[in-house]
Amino acid sequence: MPERKETGALRVAKSAKSVSSAVFLSRIFGLVREQVLAVLFGAGTQMDAYVVAFRIPNLLRDLFAEGALSSAFVTVFTEYEHSRNREETNRLVSNVFTAIFIILAIICFFGIVFSKKLVLIMAPEFSLVPGKVMLTTNLTRIMFPFLLLISLAALLMGLLNTKGYFFIPSFASSCFNLGSIIIGGGLALIVPSLGYPAIYGMAVGTLAGGGLQLLIQTPVFKKEGFRVKPFLDLKDPGLRKIGKLIIPAIVGLSATQINIFVNTNFASRCAEGSVAWLNYAFRLMQFPIGLFGVALSVATLPLVAKQAATGELEELGETLASSLTLAFALTLPAAVGLWILADPIIALVFQHGRFTSFDTAMTGQALRFYAVGLMAYSAVKIIVPVYYALNDTKWPVVASFVSVGLNIIIILLTIDRFQHRAIALSTSVTIIFNFLFLSVILYRKMGGYPVMRLFSAFLKIALASAVMGYGVIMAQGLFHPGTGTWGLLIKVFLGVSIGIVVYLTAVTALGLQEAREIISRLIGKTKPG
Image (cartoon, rainbow, N blue to C red):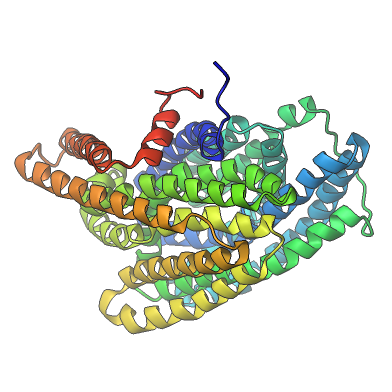
């Protein structure tokens, strides 16, 4: 019997399975990291300062490590792999790494020098609390080199993905979390005896974690025969092409960073602890985003880059539709579950040490509003790389800047009533707009993709998720295991378990064949042809 050709959907699912397993470990360690922060610092002044300090270099990290740079590099590197010899490809790699190292080293230097000014711009209301600006400034200076380490790690990740390595690059982020937990947590217990705030230890641990994320990937990089040598040729056509792709993409992604800046600025004006509440809530949101959205994006990028490079637009459309269907099938029920189980999940994960029941309630309110945009977050992470693969950065730029204006308008209209919840709500509304806008433009640009199949799948998934939500609510009313750790664990476990069973039953009854096949592939119940 001839072997069945593996479809784009199954290829994405197969790669996404490797990424998801690694990202799952990373997100587990990430939650442990947040638990350490919650136990040691709660949601007070030190935690607010740490979040803002980390966010300053992290804004630039999102541009370089997980955005324009990685996508542009993968696009050009894929072309070189198919049309150039190994010597030319190695030359491109060395040139890109050298150029990025020099640029980011300069950015880090000026970031450290002007840290206080950056803090006052991002969180001006911190000046109302004695010592809060200086604490945030010192933390920023410690963590700024994280930008350089994590960006180089992202370049390695993109390169290794194109060579078929998915688990190790995705697992590398676990090393960041482990470094933060072990080194940061350990130092947080030691540095107070030296006369420094405990939060300094977590800042050093964050920097060490970035170094570990880079180092863990280098053995595989060397195994593939790549070597980075100091080399800079600004006239190199490969480097210039990356520059042409990255500059407008950075302009577009800068709008996202403006949104984060705006949100942080508004959050600093709300009640003490608002920055931390939003941070804890979004960290929980990052679990399904990373597990589903990032995993599918990483798995899809090399495939769509190849299909775009070879002009296979019909296959590209099929890959996009299949990836989005899987994203919908995984994130929509997850969003419903987060809305219903927000408080018990937060209490179970964070409500220990200095993290109080009031912090749980405030974080839960933010998480529910963030969950509204979960599906769109994951979908945008899939659809934007398709634009990069098609060498079109114009429309993501337009969508991002329109989102900035929409974000500011929504916050101004709602912040007096909703306080920190307004920021989470606005974030979700703008990302939903972003996804819908980019979907329509891409449909016209590609001459169409299976949108009716995608819409039909969405309706079935939405109905199945609604049935699941009703089942979870009914089950929650029947069981009252208590508010202790074991009671919360039982409540969350039962809620999640019942939700999964009801959702899968509903999906099967509604005949969502494609999603069922891919999900089965992800959990290893079927094999290709």
